[in-house]
Length: 273
Image 1 (cartoon, one colour):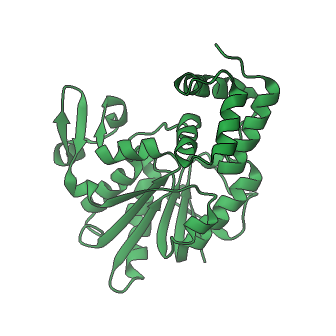
Image 2 (cartoon, rainbow, N blue to C red; image 1 turned 120 degrees about the vertical axis):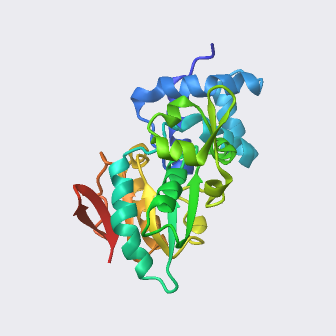
């Protein structure tokens, strides 16, 4: 197996940080080595230096997408951190809808991975009497093209499905083979997927007038400087009165004062004045 030298690892880390804002600490050198080792073989390269050289000089956007796929972790499942979703659907969404004429709702899942989060929100909004008759749009984005492609197939195994309540399982899924479940077209049609780097200010400037943003369990991959930039970008995408949800274990305490934290049913919601 090709060895990743410390000097090359640092160059890779700096390059990845520059392009994505994702910071990889020294303790995760093995992570880069494991994730990229197979790519070297696929490209018939003899060293990590050769691969880095290829990335820097080729300006190959498709290879950059492969790199992002390799370095990102996509651990997710339906109805994850359900308390936040319930607070949004039952408490925040009706208030946000009431502020629009005609009533409507625009949601952005900014790190949607394989789609479980935006699809969960779509199902919950469909099932909630206060929101089910209202037009709503859900934009789902991720830096990784491969997870977005998987999301659009809307086929899920038992691990992703383990928290799905029976009522949702029966109404919105059909069996696809022995262990997979296929999501109904009704829900799939409510979610639009797009590849977006959260540090890409130019791209995010095209996203405006959003009522609620979910950016959960992704800030942990950024250092403070990148976190500040990401939150500034998300803030600009929100309409006045809009709200931001981050992971239950995450905080914006030393990141921004632009968003006001509010506690609703023991859940922190960050609101734009």
